[in-house]
Image 1 (cartoon, helix red, strand yellow):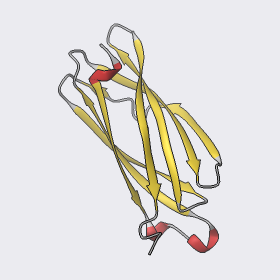
Image 2 (image 1 turned 180 degrees about the vertical axis):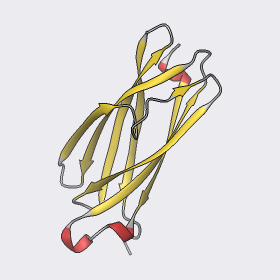
Image 3 (image 1 turned 120 degrees about the vertical axis):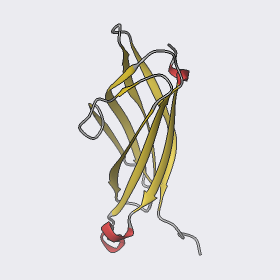
Length: 124
């Protein structure tokens, strides 16, 4: 199985009701859909994120699974979850990777392409 058999789609959203721009607190949700186009079942065992805000501040996040789960994704299936992040600026970027393991124990990295977190209507 190659990492290219795992497709990752991202959908970020600004949460105005949880944000406080006057206090430099901007909250974003992001929904991730992981689709297994390979021919073997995989399990997502860990994640690694690099989050960069508009000031260049970088935060690395690593941990087991996602949202408390280590989902198994069969060939042709997908797994979707939503999580969140807060920034000190109204714009940022997230990118990273998932460590996946096949049933036979082989591990590989599934890259998550950079995606933009942005408060809407920043430029009027």
